[in-house]
Image 1 (tube, rainbow, N blue to C red):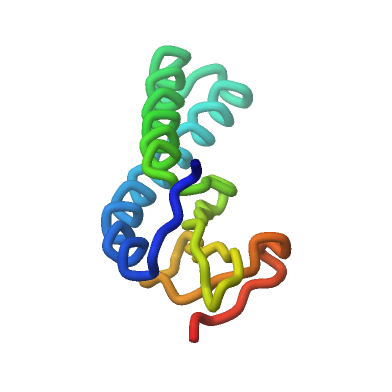
Image 2: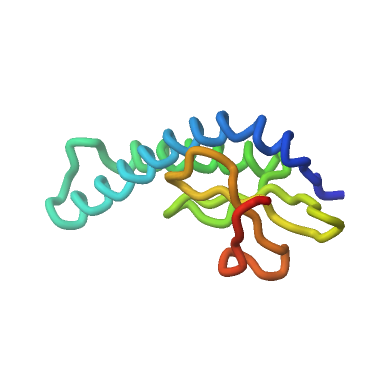
Length: 120
């Protein structure tokens, strides 16, 4: 059975998610820079294939950790995660996107991001 978060549970996890996301964002940028430099310059000051594989592994570790906690990963550029929840008897996703400082949005499960609304 999938985990259902209360708003308080999701908000309690958010500081760790934000910290993990900061690291993921830096890794994502490094990965993009290495790939670009290798393609256009032949090499990168940030490293080569081994460094790219290590960065990819770190990103996958973060994503797996979130999934293991019941958090749904919707994207990594930008980082977008959902916490399955129930609001007024309706299945919803408490929604956080890169750059936000708090968990203040939700959407009905079937609507996805376009149905996003501020939490009451």
